[in-house]
Figure 1: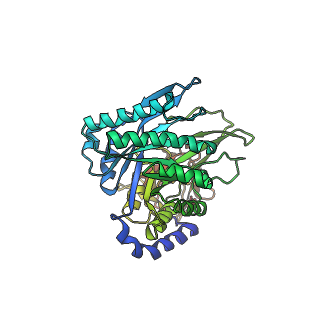
Figure 2: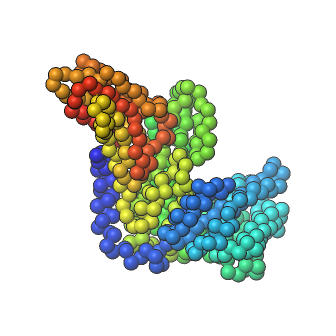
Figure 3: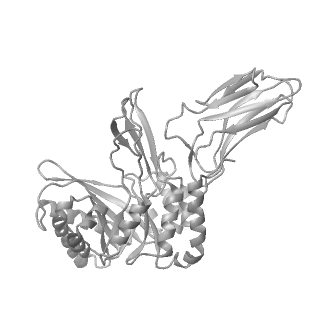
Length: 436
C-alpha cells in the first residue's frame, strides 16, 4: 500500500482536531452546495445530480451565457438542463447566468442591460412554467476592477426586476478577490444584491514550465475570506474540484490551458503539466471554515459537481466523501494474482484503494526468487502499457509513461497491467513507484 504524504497527514490531523467541534454546523446554518457547469445534460450529468443531491444543500446550475460582438450586441447560449430531474430535487436551486467580457459603458437601460434583464426574466419564467422552484438567480461576470460602479447599475436593475416579478428569488453574484481592495466600490456592489460568492480559485499564467502553479492557495484564501467578512453582506466561498492541462512549447513557454472536453492535438515536442485541486487541502479548508465560520460567511459552493467521465475533475466519490464529513484518503496497491490452474500465469493488478483519483505510478517493478533460478517463458502487457523483462537479474518493469498526462485511476478501480508465465513456482514481489 502506498502511503499518504506528510503534508496530507498534517492536514488530516488538523481535521481530526476540529471535527468534533464542528459536526453540529453541518446541515444547519452552514451549507455545502455545488455548481453544475455543463452546457448539455447527458445521462451521466443526470445521474450525478440525482446521486449527489441528497448530500447537497443547494445546486447552482449554469442556465445561460451571454457574449458580445464588436458592436455590443448580445449573443445568448441557453443550456439544456433536464427540467424533470430538477423538479424532483428537494434542495434550493440557483440559476446562473454567465456574462462574457464587456468593455463598453454601463447603464441601467442600454442594449446590454435590456438583454441581461430580458434573459433573466426568460430563464425564470421558463423554469416557473416547468414547475421548477428557483430560490436564487446568480450573475457570473468577471468585471474589470475599474468598472465595479458600472456593474452595480446592472445588479440594481436586476434586483428591481426580481423584486417586482419574482419576489421569492434572491440575487447573488460571483466576486473576485481583487475586487475586495476597492473597499467602498465593492461594498456598494455587494449591497446591490442579497449575497455574493467569493471565488478564491484561479490559475495565473505560469512564467515557465517549472514555475509553481496552484489553483487555490489556502493562506491567501483565508485572508480574502476574512476581508470579505467585513463587507457586511452574506456570502459563500467557492472552492475548486477541477483541474487543468497546462500546455507549454518545447522551450517551456506557456501555450494554453485545457479544461474538460476533447483534447486538442499537440505537436510531439509539446510539454504538458497537470494541475489539480488537492482534495485533502480543500477538505481541510472547508472544515476550518465550518468550524469557526467567519462573520456573514454562510457556506461553501464546490466548483464543480463531478460527473462520470470527467478527465480533470475530482471523482464523484471524492466529493461525496467530503460532503459526508469524512477525510478523503489516497491509496494505491499492486499485487500479483496467480491463475487457479497450474499453468504458472501471474497477472499484475493495480488498484486504487482510496477516495481520490490518482495518477498512474510511472513504473511497476517486479522481482522473483526460485530454486533453481527461473525465468518467465512468456509475458505481455495490457493496453498501452509496456513490459520489459531482465532474465539475468530476475526482474521486470511495467511502464505507464505512454498514458496521457491526465490519465488517472478512479477510486475503487482495479486494472490488469500485464502478465508473466513461469514453468515452475516462484516467489514474486511487486512494487509501484510512489505517486503522492
